[in-house]
Image 1 (cartoon, rainbow, N blue to C red):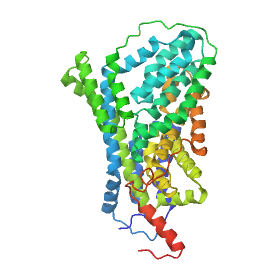
Image 2 (image 1 turned 135 degrees about the vertical axis):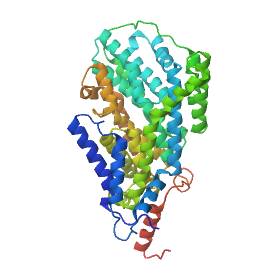
Image 3 (image 1 turned 30 degrees about the horizontal axis):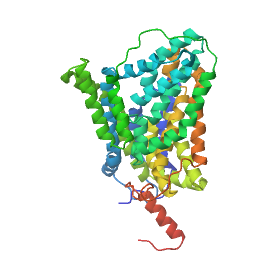
Image 4 (image 1 turned 60 degrees about the vertical axis):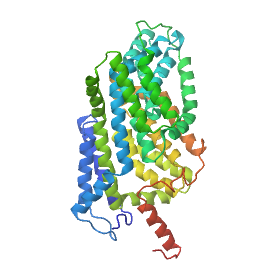
Amino acid sequence: MKETGKGSLKGLLPLIVFLILYAATGIISGKFDSMPLLVGMIIASIVSFAINPPSGTKKLNFEDKVMLFCKGGGEPTLMMMVVIFILAGAFQGVASKMHAVSSVTNLGLSILPANMILPGIFVIGCILSFAMGTSMGTIAALMPVAVDVATKTGVNPALMAGIVVGSAMFGDNLSFISATAIASAQTQGVAQREKFKLNIITYIPAIVINVILLALYPIKTVVLTGSYNWNFVDIIPYILVIILSLVGLNVMPVMLIGVVSGVVIGVIHGDFGWIGSMTYIQQGMAGMEDMAIIAVFVGGLVEVMKYLGGIQWLMDTLGKQTKSKHGAEFSIGALVTLLCVATTNNTIAIITVGPLATEIGRKFKLSRARVSTLLSMFATHVQGLIPYAGQLLVAGGMAKVSPIAVIPWVWYCYLMIIMSLLFIFLDFPRVKVTPESGYDHFEIDDSVAKEEEKDEANEAGIATD
């Protein structure tokens, strides 16, 4: 059965319908989270079933379309990502209850110098978001402290909100348990360590410049008051996850070790009992269930759009405009950025663009590690600058300022954009493309690539099977 024929713009109609519905409900209601993403994806999937493929492609009946959808939703790499999402949620649930989050925050506050309040808040936020793997959790935990500092120092609350949002996006991009980082690595079959190495080398200048700018910003000298108690034992689960990820252990046993260590420490400290710990594991997993189900629907929808020729049309259109590896990498970054702006959810944007990024990477002989890094980078810096996204809405609400007023102060996100563009156009850090680091041995549905090879051969007058 030929699932991918020639390209057709109507093959993208399901995604276009989803984006229009999402934007329309946001504009009408005044809240861009009015349309639940899962409902939007279900509607888009229904639309995809009603569209006929372009001429030359075998027309499938309803049952065959359902099976095609299920094939995409159950793709092995996608299922692995779903399992990792659930395990990461379990870890976050346990770590929060056994006071690992508060210990990380209080550790930073207890050693923060009085003359380094602003860069200190940023660094604490980076550490916290890297440990927690959630930008929203970081903002919720750190904004009360940031608001208190703003009151005492006379600093613009919008600036403090911008500092916290920037630090939150640091972990959203780099944390080993961030859904965004997991999605970008898993969709390209890359170890988290490989993506992290390229990411951190690229963003070190942004981190340093941001810290210097914040240190130079004039404020009143203030000493934070209060009791900031922390316990080294409480942060051991985070330390284990970070170290084991850096040494290259598979992400699934890393998450399991993190959960088990958190449970053991929580039971010893009396935070919960053995049986009670299961409740917090379940609550953490429940927080990721919605994301996991959406990922399955996105996988199925993308598979049907391939059959309808939408992905091939997009590839053909990009191919006409893209003539170099730099252009191909920029196209990947632009696609994930546009989808982030449209959906305000960078993980879903990565999952949606991931299969297309794979095909672009294969066509232009890119390295999987750089493609994974591009997805992660371009999906996180824009997320911190969208005024109707959750990050700015929460930060602005807690600081009692408009989300739009926060945008000019998210300096780290602007520096991330600059570094991301330099990553592309300077080709640094460079990754040598070999059959192993490229897409030659990456097992995906390569029907699009085969069709392209056949078309190129036909154009050259070469007979193919």
